[in-house]
Length: 516
Ligand code: HXC
Image 1 (cartoon, rainbow, N blue to C red):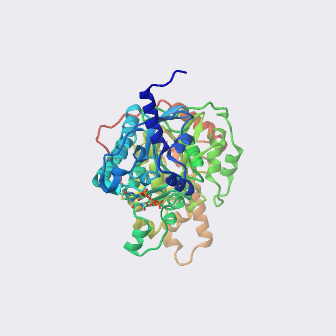
Image 2 (cartoon, rainbow, N blue to C red; image 1 turned 90 degrees about the horizontal axis):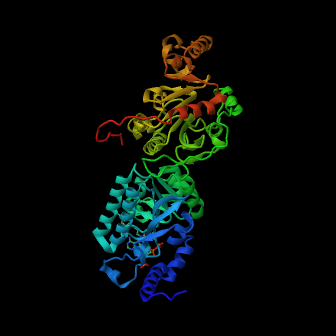
Image 3 (cartoon, rainbow, N blue to C red; image 1 turned 120 degrees about the vertical axis):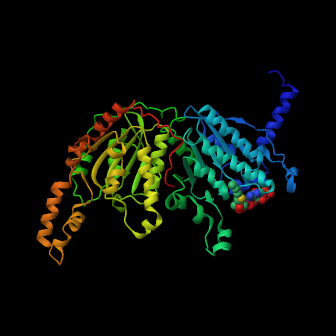
């Protein structure tokens, strides 16, 4: 082999110096905290040997508070391009060992460059966040740097998928970049997200908390809904991100990748038949329905632990990715509340932005009643799901499984909000409300004073016979076909096959005004 030139040797030396990273004690502290190194993370996330680093030699010009006296390798963030399942992605990975992964101007500009390249090349962006936030020594340059990232997050929204993995602290305004991205992943034990930490909260409000219960993975996946996916380890997190990639396209002009389907599109299901025969009072698991409909019985769930009364996620039908939104009778009887409405709205909008057809499975008794819900803004916040369905132009297929009552019937992909093909099982009940409630209102005078018993039973039976069925809706064309429950998969597949080339003209306006 020929000896390398001096210039090449210098390049190799400079690169090696930066890649060697921070001082050994910082590396040791990162490991002790149970966290991987920034470059290790990229190695696990991306296809083998696919990472191409940019701006390796970029450095900070800040000199305040001794910044000029210490090396800040790569200014605390590794940026570049790589591949996931052979598809190109733009990535950044913050290096906590370099001044806590804090964000100064050069650090921000490196991230911005990657985001610009992502939009221009139509590639998803993935951020691996592990940072103490704005680098205090860089003052307003750090704040401006964050704002430049936020601005780009918004410009990229709906053009390329954006994913954030929180792999350490993420504090202050820094949380708003992940918040704008499409999906947030967190890892149990190491991820923390908050606007103000436990000390500030203690000083300001007197509340006692610790950083994990305030902003850990469990909190944000169950209570706040900030986090869509929880992982047990960093490796698990990267595996889940790679799995998500199977269902999402590169950008808004493309469709998600198809897979060869070996499951029969004509497969009938005895399980669905049994569920449809179940007593209306008995509760079933909506995931069983989703599994019976999907290719190979597989379902990739989003927001699994948040607002469990509405289940959202991705399946495949004949190999093509489809987004599923389904009421879950096991929690709050499947009613819609504030959290479910916001969760569903965000999911529907993601699918619509990225050409992923929507399958809606309906079993909903209505909106969840209560003073807390009303005062919490169910009117304004519940309207988000309605808005999202009305706005979505991707192919929409809806199946009313059992109950579809009141406003929730309208919202959940009904014909009126432009469901393309709407099915119902024969046991479906599509009405303003359930029989008991309706009789209590309609015959309040007659039933007053304890007159109930036999007469009430008669009235309930009569109402059920007249209204608690799918046939009135079918007569009016609001249901296109009443189908046998066991044939749900073939019917839904046929509908989506037909809708494959659906084209919805765009309305010429600047943008709508979704209730926020
Ligand atoms: C400058 C910082 C820093 C910061 C940490 N460091 N945060 N340097 N600016 N914001 C430095 C530390 O001085 C230390 O430097 C190194 O990073 C590692 O930090 P440690 O504290 O030793 O690590 P650890 O004990 O693991 O604690 C990590 C931490 C804590 C939880 C992140 O450092 C912390 O609470 N930092 C402040 C977080 C915060 O309040 N951020 C919000 C900033 S305001 P040495 O010299 O030892 O290597 C903000 C607003 C953004 O982000 C606004 C956008 C609109």
